[in-house]
Amino acid sequence: MSVEPVGERTPSFVVCGDNPLVYQLAAQLVEQFADGVVTVILPNRRGGFVSLLERLDRVRILCAERLDEETLRIAGVAEARALALVDQADVENFHAALRAHEMNPDIRLVIRMFNTGLGFRIRTLFADCVVLSISEMAAPSFIAEALGVKALDYLRLGERTLYVTGPNGIPNGTMVCGLVESPPGEIRLLASTRSDARALALAGRAPHTWNSRGRFLLKLRYLARHNLVRLMLSLLTLIVLGCALMILIGNAWGDAVYETLLDAAGAAQPEHQREPIFKVLQVVVVFIGLALTPVVTAMVVGGVLRAQLSEQIGPDPKDFSDHVVVAGLGNVGMRVMEQLSDLGVPVVGLDYDENARGIALARTLGVPVVIGQATWEDTLAAAGVSRARALVLLTSSDAVNLEAALLGQSYHDRSQHDGLNVVVRLSDDDLAERVQRKLENSVVVRSVFQLAAEGFAAAMAERRVIATLSINSARLMVAEVPVEEGSALVGKPIRTVGLPVHTRVLAVQPEVGAELQWQPDPETLLAAGNQLVVVSNRYGLDDLLAHSTVGATPEPGDDDPAEADPAIA
Image (cartoon, rainbow, N blue to C red; front, side, top):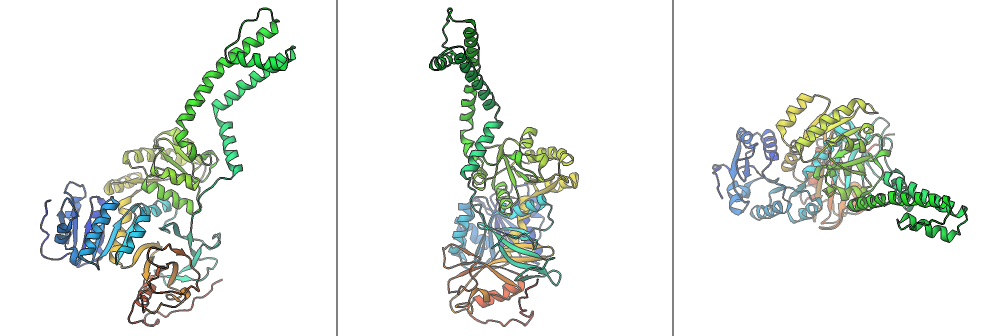
């Protein structure tokens, strides 16, 4: 291990990783905190973003091969306000978090993990921890651009999607509250919505299942559209017709079937004494049987090749219109696909690898998947790009995404709708900015790391905040609030939690390790050890945190009156 000295001054924040998110996060932190110091721990200085880090004020670089106790101690973790672990390896990040927590039990831990199920469970092991997924954080931006929405109005919470929608068409049981921006820059949470206002909804997801009639129609449609199946049925029809003709010329039906099957199998024997019409039928059936043999062989071989994909057959993309094509079903692609599905937007998946991470999820959601390269025109045609509203390119290859984006531009004018929205993922921030300037408005280019940086910075700066939701110029925060023994919340019903127009309870966890109860009964009484998941503005969250801990319980009204929750028609 090689360690570079970082000086005597203790840093306020520590960031560990080896990807462009390290630079983006450090830049956000030094911009937000004028007196803050950021220490970045890198395995080496070979990354292209290192030169950018070196130009930032109040950022110190420490190089170490492993995040062991010595490295964390030199970085100042024992006195740091927050530690961000943004490498891609989930288990290694968890291991480093355990080491840091032993050194500083009060440190704010921000851990990057793709496996959000694991992340949700390990949060309970630390006093103050938030687990974030880059793919989940970036997905709302790609969705917003694909759907033509300017604001980032989608947020993934475990198995739920929190999203902003209009006042009409909200599914029963999903509405959280109405939203009003008053005064500008501040969001108020109302019990109901008015005709011109928006609402906050919480959508779940039920596994997609096919009934017997749906399965039968899928199989029938598959048979009707398969060229080899149609050819085989035509040849079998001719063989049956030959058998019927043999019966008509005087053969017993049993003899006619016997002779026809032998002839079709190529086992016909010359029968010179038979009448000419029989000889003609025999020759015709023999040649039909010879033609049928390679057709059956081709179907068997094709069936073997498609065996691994047989379970993922879903709706036919040819039946889709005004849908979103998601190319690349890796970490980001599968998050975009599942959130679009939760929002009720029709989706068609596309991936070159039939074993991609998102294939199993697509099967669960009932999303059709086209196997092929996004740079092939026939693959895009099979996915129905000409009828789609958006093409979202999220493969792991920048070259593939760029080539497919340029190909997708040709569909912009040919689209059957107002125009095809092409959204591209690039891993290099600088490349993304330059490509966006070059292509202007025809293609939207986004960097995943750039999109995730703001959320990571907010998580490091705000205690208890696990996510943020931007609505125009305002911001709502989703936070986890523990109910401490002896606090003012113990024994109170959920409906009394927080200020009426500032806070809403999304879920409650009865005890550590228990499943979340989403949109709980407002009359449920709170007990010590409960954990609340709330959506709130800044004023509401500060008030709720004060009431959830033992000590002073400020009365509402000092800075902002606790207004009654109006029912706005």
